[in-house]
Length: 424
Image (cartoon, rainbow, N blue to C red; front, side, top):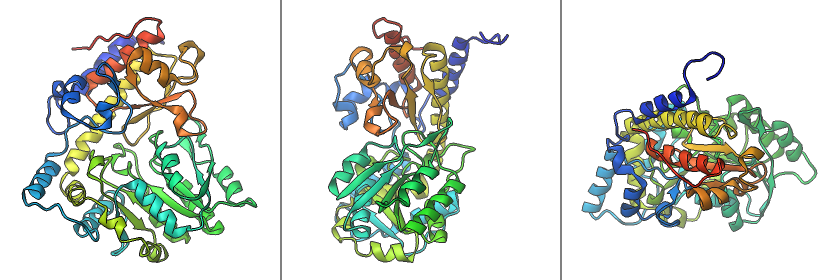
């Protein structure tokens, strides 16, 4: 109890748990007990469920435990029953589906002909860099950021320059440092913007995006904006697409995104690359035809169904993520008060600061927690400068799974063996 508050931390976490349980089902109406990790491990075959032994809670890779939206499931079934499994040459119905979603949710008017297909966002980033900066050069990232950026950039000839974010405590772009690097003698040829940011879960403010666009235009920096988490912006928060701002400032830019994170469709393999203006659109016309051909037709129709017909499922998912996030905040306060967690306002990834010496989790907390707590998290070291001592946790799961994970982590921090006690 603190400051005369008669509600204990345990009471607060219990109340948060009950709110997260909600109606007792996930956004698709699946009862929570059917999403127990032991059950999902027998049903699913992705890396999330096959990388670690059966006694490990997998909260690392950004895949949801929630069942896919019925509208998407039914569309995929229809396509398979029709044997509609051939090759693609272009976006077809996905162009209008994405444009409608962007207009309705973000007031972004996507011009016709500005949208191209790619297998996934990583492919969209790499192929965009190849056509816009074929000679390579120096590429900047605001770190700590999605580890996949470092992996995909091995495919192109760039020197990676890490520019740490400002934390006060919410993450923001260090525009002064970005300006210094853009205007330096070596300069910067390309910049990957991750908005909303992974792992902090922060959608950047319009003013900082406008300044970034102005700097990019002034110094001829090509900006690729990865906006894959944008559909998952929380209620009361706002998301600003970079493309309209870039077009206004005269910055060369494309946006890469997909329904894959918002609707849990990563394995269906379809994304879009959107040109910010006519200059970028002409560049994207140079994409090899195989960039579209390698995209999955099932993924395309899953994306169309998501953006057009599964918006209610998305809204329920965001509400559940918010409830799970509040549960994690309460549990950390009760069970692991030495840990620091600043909740984001987009996505379902929690960035945990586990550097406090009192936690005694070492330089890479994820390694210790995997070994002793049997909880698999992402190592902060993989996210670049500023990530050491942090770990990323996936909140898109049953509330019971979150409780189990925190119970196990707390037991290790307290010097005991991993244990759990699910509330009911």
